[in-house]
Image (cartoon, rainbow, N blue to C red; front, side, top):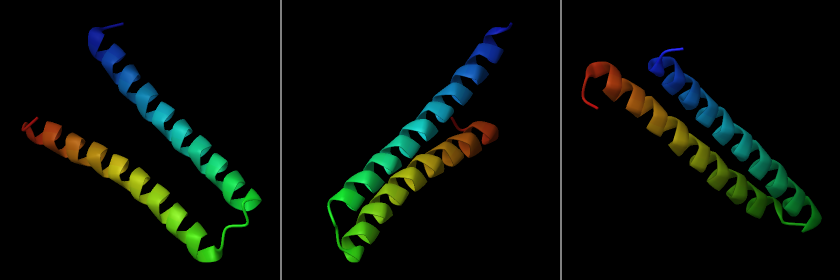
Length: 73
């Protein structure tokens, strides 16, 4: 394998790792909210914050890909 293939595999593996971490965090938060009898408004706020964290990570990767394809980064 060439070095560029290793870099591609590392990037894909890292992204899959972060996806798994976000899923596990979501499952843990769901369990805590269910056991804690949190009101609906509080649940919505917690899920909004978790979604914004995921959206920030995804947008960072999209911006990085756009910059790399245009030769900026």
